[in-house]
Length: 233
Ligand SMILES: [Zn+2]
Ligand SMILES: [Zn+2]
Image (cartoon, rainbow, N blue to C red; front, side, top):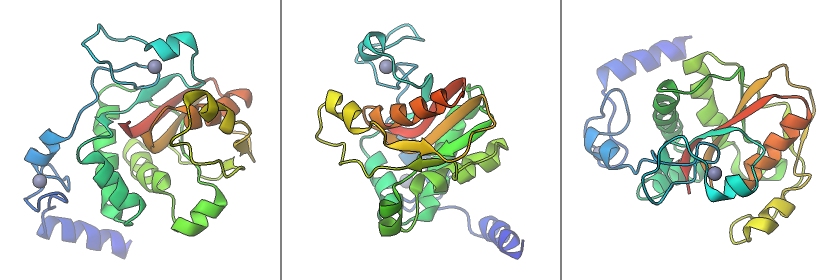
């Protein structure tokens, strides 16, 4: 409580600063208007997996990959591309433990959600394998999801889904192998009391990991699974 008041007073006395250039923050963001405008948006993309389209298409559209083989999740909200300053903003949170970036990323993602997503009943941050969690000391997806849960008043569940297998690093694996590599990677230790769930993560690459988790949720009876990610690679 005291901590909260201190934060409020601090924010009013010291306006936010841009984490990229040091200028005054824009609209309570730790980012100035210029740097915000420079972030690469992902506006024309596949509504299911968030893959950016090379040319302008009538929306909503599905990408070739989703048409061929649909992932286990239903819709993806990925407002930015994993380019330019996004890897830095996410990397500073993930590896530099810059917690204010979790707030910033959640605000950026939250603006996109507020503009048009149907809100789920439950937010589920992408779980880390316990070994990775021990190494890193925290889960960046939980840190981002915390802010979103508060903003939209949606319960946050970081207990029920477990990453049961420490999967090989996905980067560098071909798409087919990524899917195979993810088999049996997640389990639920508790059934979810929700029909519509959104999985929260920092970045989505091919979607194989999040599809594996969505598959486990669907098998457990969840009707709709959306994906909320800050950036799409
Ligand atoms: Zn700036
Ligand atoms: Zn797609």
